[in-house]
Length: 169
Image 1 (cartoon, rainbow, N blue to C red):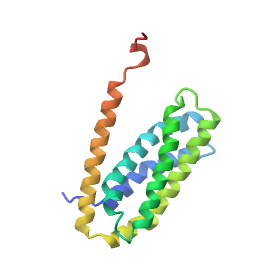
Image 2 (image 1 turned 90 degrees about the vertical axis):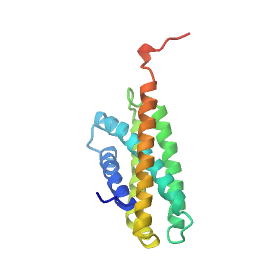
Image 3 (image 1 turned 90 degrees about the horizontal axis):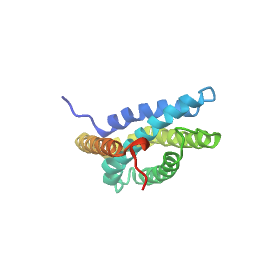
């Protein structure tokens, strides 16, 4: 089986993010739909962004062809992380207030801009800056990081006891 390069992997990972963006920015989607989409979107975003930073950004930031757009990417990820952390810390699953819906829409719009910039600019520049072999190696690192983060996230979720099982001292 032929190994996928980082460009193909990133574009594939953008698809579920785009689906979430569509729901979170929709005026016709119901709050329950948005709440469900947000829950999945936050997980997809975290896995994608952290994998992208570790496997791609950290490894190509010094290539002049992509240097500036990678630095912008780091900053956009940092802003998205702040909003995502605030949403995760909120009680959006039980109370999806107008304010939380607005915050989730702003996050989705930021990610939409970021994805468009990556697909229209950064990935094209990356293709010019790297050989196919380098792109495949970056893809392998991306996949490895993504799988590791998925395992860590699953382990963290199973180690958290439901409130009904927690004892208060």
